[in-house]
Picture: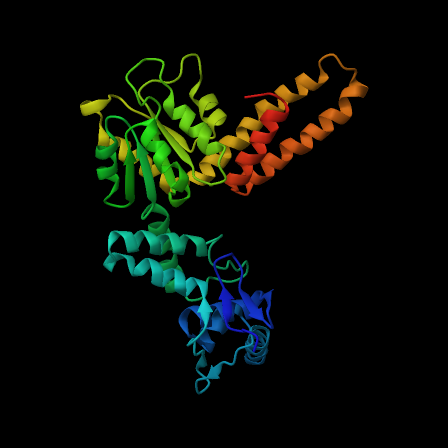
Length: 354
C-alpha cells in the first residue's frame, strides 16, 4: 500500500504525501491541516474567527483539506474537528520531540538529536499571508526549539597550539568538542572532518613569526567535499591584508581577534564570539564570504581575458567566464557551501587567480 502518512511543515508550506507524490496544501485548507497536524484539534469558532468564513465554507475547507491530505477528520459534536495523529510522520512534531528531549539526554545523544533536528528545519513553519498562525502555542514552542537547536549541540573541532583545551572546555557547556594542538594532529583527524559542524583554528600553530598553518588548514578544508565552515582565531592579521579581504579569500565563517595568547588569552570572550557566529549561522556566513569574493575574482578574470584581445575576441570568453562565476554565486546564495567551494576552486584554477 502507498504511504499516505508523511507530512512536512518546516519548509514554509503545508505538504502531504498523497499516492506517493508530494503536494502543497494552501490557503484556508492548509491552515486547518497545519492546526490539526500540530495540535490534533481545531475549534470551529477559531477557524471562523481567523478566516471569516461561513459554516458552509468551513465545511468545504475541512473536506478539501482531508481529501488532499488523504486523512479523515472527526467532528466533535459541532464544536470543531480532531485528528488521530497515531502513525503519522510529521516533521514539526519530530523536530519538537528531538529538541525538547535534549535536556534529559547525555551530551553525545543530545548532540546527535540536535543534529537530526537541524536537518528537519528548512525555512520554518508555514506562513499564511491572510491568517494568523494556527496552533500559536506550538508555533512558539517551535521557535524556542529552533533557537536552541541552532545555538547548541554543535560538534566543534578546536585547533590551537596553546589554548585549544581551554577554548573547548568553555564551549563544552553547550557543544561537543575535540581538539588538535598541531598541524600533524589535524591531519590525523582530517579524514573525518565531515563529523564536525565547525572548525575553529588558530592562524599560527607554531611560535615562529612566519607561520600560517591556519590558512593552510582552511585551504585544505576548502578543497574537500565536506561542507564544514571554518572560523579563524588570530592574535595578528596577515601583513598588508585587510580583514575583510582575508575572510573572503579563505571563505571564512568569521575571525576571532585575540587580545592575548597563551595563558593570558581571554577564553570566555573567545567562546562568546564563537557562539555568536554559531547563532548567526557559520555556513551562511562562509557562503556570504565566498559570494563577496567573486566580485573581485570576476573583475580580475575579465581583465585577464580582455588584455591583449579586441572587444570582439574577448566577448565570448567573458560571457563564458560570467556563467562560471554565476554558478559559484548561485550555490553560495543557496548556502550550498560544498558546491560553492568546489565551483570557486575550479574558477580560480581556470583563470589562475587566488
